[in-house]
Length: 115
Image 1 (cartoon, rainbow, N blue to C red):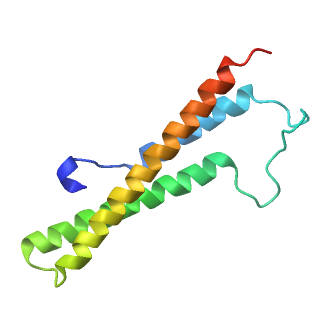
Image 2 (spheres, rainbow, N blue to C red):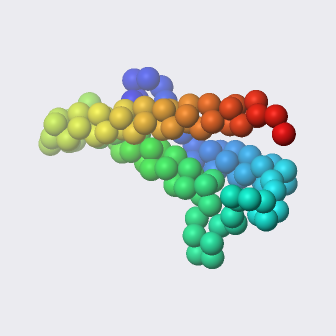
């Protein structure tokens, strides 16, 4: 993933997600509407789940970058481990992008609905 120039800053991602969540919450229903429930005590809301997933992807990419640098400098003993780590990071990133696209598609469909 390092060769693609992809870098994630978890702080910026967290801030962006929190800002969007706050904007959504300010425009959200009060939880008494049919089919809408508030997050149960101790449970995670959707933005927290997304943030955890993004941090996992970020961690996988950073680990892959670290192992790639170690292989390049001769410090790593296992080339296989670095390749596997890079593939895991790439798969995590692609999965995140698919989920993102699905969420955006669902949002756009909801916005098209007439009330």
